[in-house]
Image 1 (cartoon, rainbow, N blue to C red):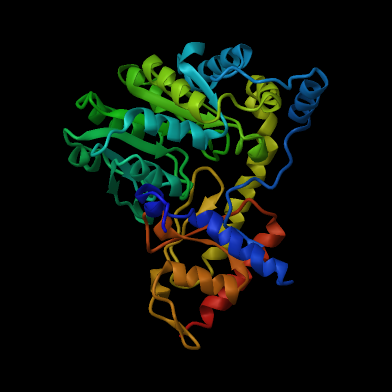
Image 2 (image 1 turned 45 degrees about the vertical axis):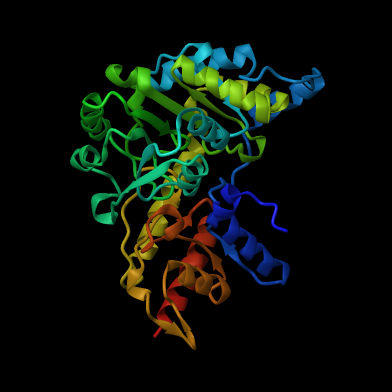
Length: 397
């Protein structure tokens, strides 16, 4: 007897987590696998944030928390939005959740009805499409490539919007490409949105502090779009707090209240200890994490320079995050012994099993000709990983 719902049977396993699991299985067999699949900073949480968490334990912050978050944390997040993003959210418009991923699914559940269309610039983060389909929405994918720096044009956006469009969902800087829309580019897209007031914008800005050439611009700071933009952020990437599970959103008040209602029935409030640590992080000057950002910049430059030595692989120059998203379709159809590389998933399995480097196939992100590498690892590991990839690719015939 199959007791599973149709909904969960249609839900795909996260490719990033699946590849990490396969890599760990090889490690357990004693094989030296370099994991470039997971998007997790390899830095420790800053000491002042850890100290705030320890203090919270000593002060007995061990009881249920308010569903939207502690009042002083909501006020601090409102101040952070003003300080860093020129966003004007009241504390009543902010909801703290167990990670930015929960913030996003809260918004999708609160707004998307069956049959509603949600526009995703592709490549998109692996969970966006699954979240939408889980809620019976329709994914409208807009294709881009490395030549356009993985960015859509205003004309593409205009053509994609229909009366059924409910939401436009994107990450900036992007996971999986690291591309970042400039202020001018977002303002140009904003002119399209102004003509279509029925479209909600969900801007995932979790990589905000990991930018290299210019400061990130929040699309919700455009006054005409402020009352229909939801801004999601968190502490996992910028403050290396992945395990603390703390994300937050700023939204029009009706959407924020709906998210509180949903969260109250699922998880209730986020961890008390994480919230007290988050208060210290949110109030800190962003320059406190500059050293981590500079390390990522150096790793990006190193990885791109090394990949340029691999034939028939094409990359952009990402402006943020910690990912490279190379185009590798030249190697499709080639063989290793009796195994044919039919697609990026086959190629990633080959690079894992033969090259011993864990990567993520691009099909999970809506871009089947690509693979994703995370450079959230040491420069020595990056050099060794690219060496292994280059050797394995050269063995394909």
